[in-house]
Image 1 (tube, rainbow over the protein chains, first blue to last red):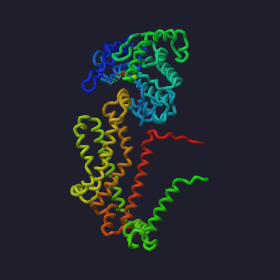
Image 2 (cartoon, helix red, strand yellow; image 1 turned 90 degrees about the vertical axis):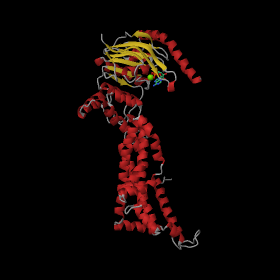
Image 3 (cartoon, rainbow over the protein chains, first blue to last red; image 1 turned 45 degrees about the horizontal axis):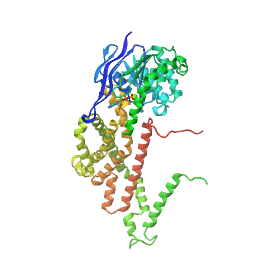
Image 4 (cartoon, rainbow over the protein chains, first blue to last red; image 1 turned 30 degrees about the vertical axis):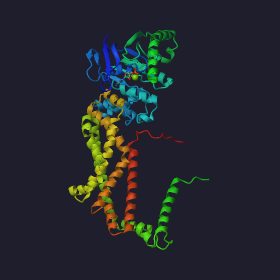
Length: 270
Length: 268
Ligand SMILES: Nc1ncnc2c1ncn2[C@@H]1O[C@H](COP(=O)(O)OP(=O)(O)O)[C@@H](O)[C@H]1O
Ligand SMILES: [Mg+2]
């Protein structure tokens, strides 16, 4: 099986302000995502998940280590990857449709065919009829759908997703998770999905990787999720197999979460 | 009780002001309170009646139109040129930290300088025609737009920027599709001020030396102590400025649809 995205002994150290000591966010991390695999990375808030994803996207350069995309070393931005950001990433001055077709426009596609394709994608994410609304006129869930279409219209081989649904309420979130799974089942892209929510990670993924609390985070556990597909994220949470996996992974994570929590609390006190 | 609309009070206030003005200045209507001569008040403050008849005469004889036209031309030219320059330089310095670090003290110094004193220099350079007034307006408009665009470029959301890059935008596409629209919205937020400044540049320039324009009319009237014409000119300028401001608001509403405003709801 081919590897879509691989991190080999990746370390990321942010340079400290005015010559102070640097902060090592990620240390000696090795991680492989197979072609067509859905991998989730969970870890306590602030441990370095976004940093890792930015390395995979080419938005950030690793201090040391290697990143490979389908066997080729990554130079510059990862052109094979689409990225869905945690916070608002739509261009507020563009309508939903113009946001969805932005990537096509950047590639020089003719406006009318881009438009047609954009309408199709809006329909696929359940936004038909909302194409001429501006982002501020859409609900949070609709904006996420729009961002999803914006990424998928370019048909990336790899999807990098940084807590894409964490700002949504639980019902909307489960709807979006199911829709994501449906879209993914259609042409099995490779997914690196970041979340701090273990349930979300288990219900979506083929594999869950647990990161240690920062600083110098690195994977401390890896769990294959052999739940049957297609899945319904709300229903699968009730199955005994799910609960068993949850208990198992939580046991491995608990210490790290508490560590992370203690660190942030100390920071506040100091 | 039925609620009386705001515009009613606004108009009532306007009428009241003119009525009081008339009562206080018309010779012999009420005994002078402050001045020792009943004609003194009219000499200093003019008389609304005569002011309006001066305005009426300007418009009916058509004498005012060439002057208004010149002032409008100067204002619009100063606004357009100043905005384009401010936009270009703001984008350039916003995107090149080295250049902005080097030029920073110069920009601050030029902005701190009282620009009105440049008017005589511009007259030497550009003559007494419209261009010396346009130049003065440009120096005023430029800095407002420049600072706003510079700030706007610095504050483009890094997430939106990275998203556009991940979607495949190259450097020039980032400039055109991300920085420029973002900076334009900042230009619009300063639109009222910069149009106002273009107008100030035009009128002050005319006042200091020209052969046409409303500022010139006022200057001439002052030379012959014709206070009523001075006030007439000021009134015309005020209304003119208000109309410009309405035009700006209109353009703003058209072009900034994407901006979140207070949510609009319909009741049926
Ligand atoms: N540009 C940066 N410069 C310095 N430190 C950073 C930078 N970006 C992130 N960090 C630090 O790296 C750590 C990990 O951040 P991040 O990857 O955003 O965490 P997560 O996504 O897991 O919540 C945090 O402690 C954060 O303060
Ligand atoms: Mg994060």
